[in-house]
Length: 163
Length: 403
Image (cartoon, rainbow over all chains, first blue to last red; front, side, top):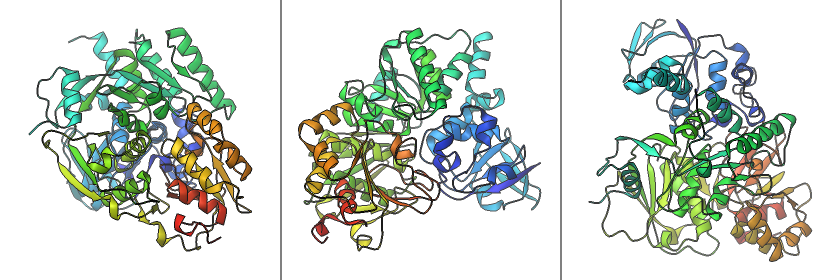
């Protein structure tokens, strides 16, 4: 069961992880500064396993992987949005953070709702509202990244067990 | 129907006879560009790949342009890491402090040739498309894998054609054209798409103008952007947007998103007081931008209480500006001249805003907090930024003598 935090449309990576923390690389340290310039104090309210629910084009702008890394470091379990900006989406799956495009959940979930996500079946259960939202499950290779905790683990696994 | 330029490049590079939009291809990378904002993560992740070695030191290009010269103890540690990694792995192309902004230097140095695939750890890598390359931004972990294998998976994109026709009126710049384009298409208007600029006004654009258009295409989500002159037949576009540039006027973007486009005249009524004017970045530090600023500021003085920051995008542009006297003019007008780098646009080094401050800039972005928590950024063309620096509030070129 995961608690949801709602954010709006076009939330940029500039907002998710402000410039002054881009000299950091440790995920946990980065995680303390999420939305630091626009919603001070937000990071302190997060608990492990929480879900961010955004609107359109989540992760707009800069390619900084520090943004999804900060979310992962803060223990965010997944990001759900109506849609994702291209590079942000790639960055998420490359570090093993599920980025789920699910318009019905983006619309139906309210802040504070509890949800359960099944990546394989492509379903999000909103236990607070007894509602189910469906999404198209990841293709196999992306699922592999997410299940292995990212691209690098996947490469290493493939190299040690060549098909 | 012929394929679009993006489909063509990906098909021929991937050895696929007829790749289609939506196909996933394993694309060979001709140039991998890595800059100091992301290099530490790239190198860290590269180190985690078992048995990895750099696939091609010759095709790998490092830039120190975001925190340049070093801005903090942490930043300089990343720079040292980059220099050491480059040395240890035989990477000779490390463009150190002062060379300037990756996207522009890549073109100046012939490192983004037509038809090549360029992957960079920067969203504005779309800018390298101005030379005809398929250039796209990726993240740090993915770049680590590119360094090891020289390949990246890409979904063959649909293409949005931006048709630009007519002649630009005096006082209207490529930047205004792009603000109008962004205003119509919105921040997601070209997400995952390739952008192709065509038409008589596109053909007439200089390389600098093309860099502005290709860089700014990122702000509507583009995967890559290119200019295609006079194709034999129309390609398979997902969407075509026509613009008559001859009816365009100077534009601005209100704080929040570069796509918040309004005619500059709507805000140039003296109502927006500024604290800082910024001329620089991959979309605003080109020779034409410095020239425009110098033309406007010659013999004049920046308004009291306004900081004007001018940062030529590259050493070559700085040098040419120096030779032509622009740097002296700007210096005498009260500008702070920065060494070629890109950090100022995103608050990484020079020109951070205080809470409540207002900046007018010709850089690509103005998201909340981008140049400092609580500071706001309006985007406009170089002339408007320079004139605003003189008047102390956002002002258009037609009002330049109203001071």
